[in-house]
Length: 187
Image (cartoon, rainbow, N blue to C red):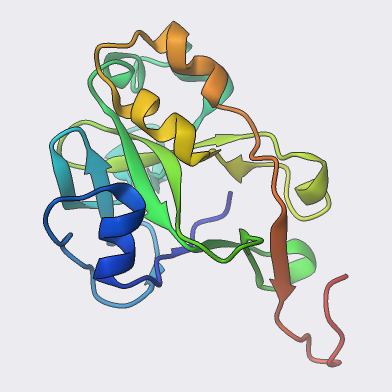
């Protein structure tokens, strides 16, 4: 997953979609980039947190966590029980052949990406893409189904119980590329 996603939904839509009891705080703008404040939903409701955190081994902030290695990484292992959160979105972007490409669920509805938080900041969990998106990028955010969201943020469930949720979303997706300088679209 590249380093941008979108949250373009109204407060009422998010309350309805995620079963919130109070209106969520909203970050400014719809396009989210690393270190921007993003909406995060946990067991105790919604809040804003910066996306990513500084780590000593790389210059760029750590914004993604590979599903396949979560339990093995000291950065994420402590977060696997009490740090599982949802990161609402309406789309994310990739850049195949240097062309900005927007990926959203086929129904256009908001969705939740699996996230991990230390209580101050958040990273998005990624996995290998399903067949529909392999030509776009080699990683994709873990887009949870509505039925699996409650299980993901349930701290009473062990990581081994929820680990099977960290797989590619079955789609369908709407994939829309911006026109290139020549005017053609990504196919």
